[in-house]
Length: 355
Image (tube, rainbow, N blue to C red):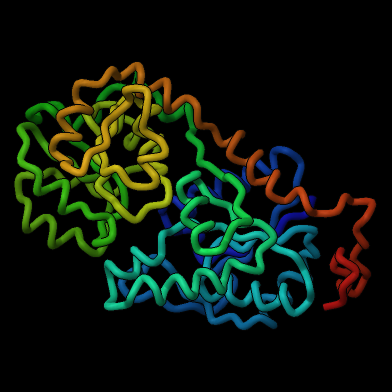
C-alpha cells in the first residue's frame, strides 16, 4: 500500500509524536508498504511561539496537494492539527479523498495551560477538524471515550511501542547516579509548563530528583529547584541507563494522551508514579506502579512495587503491534486491484479522482 503521512511534527524534533511516527514508518516499510511523509522541512517555515522546535510551515492546500499528487497515495493519514494538517484536510475534502487522523495531544488542556482560552472553544476546533476523518486513531480507550462524548465516535486504537533491545531492565545505571542519595526519582520528557514538572519537584521526599530533557521551562525550574539534578537531553543507551538506574519514574503530566516515556520506563523495570488521569491511568496496573492524586503518596507506593512486574507490563508493548493497529485503521482503503494507477501526468489519484 502507498501511505502518505502528513505531519507538522517531524524530525529533527524529539517528542513522543515524532518518535511514534518514525517507528511506525520504519515498521510499515519493513512490512513492504511504500510510505511518504509531508513535513515542515519541505516548505518555508517559522518557529512555533513558545515551542521553537516545532516549525510552522507556510503551505496552502494547493502546495500540499502537489506533494500528494506526486506521491499518488492509496491512503492519507493526517497526524497533526497544524498548518500542514489543515491544508491536507482541505485538499482531501475538496477531492473527496478519505483520510484518517490521530489525536495525539489533549489540546483543550494543553492550550489552557499556555493561553487564556476556554477548553470549550478549543473543543469546537477539535470536533471540526476530526469529524470528516474516516477513523481517528487514539492511544487509549479512555481517550476514545472522551472523543465519543464530543461526538467523535469513529476512533480506532493506535497504542505505542518500545524498542526492547534498547530499553531493558539489565542495563547498568547511568554514571551520574553513582554518588546520588537514593531513592532516585526520575522524570523524562519535554521541560515545559504543560508537563506539570513543578508538581513533581515540589514533592518533599528523601532521595534525589533527576530531570532528563530540555525545553522552555528548564531555566526557571533549575533556579527554583537547585537540589534537583538536570541531565539535559539523553538518547540511546544513555537514556536507557537513566531509566534502568532510577528507583521510580514520575510522570506528573495531566495533558498527555499516552506517555511513551511511561512504557519505556516500565520496560526498564522501573515502577511508575503518576496522577490518575488518561494516559498513565490506561497503562499502570498489575503492581507496576501507582496512581494517586497525592503524587508523593504515589511515589511512596511505586517504590514498593516489584520491578519484575514493571518489566513484564512494559514487555507487552511493541512497535510491531502498534503498527499493526495503524494498518488496521486503514482497512477501508481499496485493494491494489481496485485502485486506478497514476497516469504519466501524475493526475490519477487512486480513488477515481483528478487533482
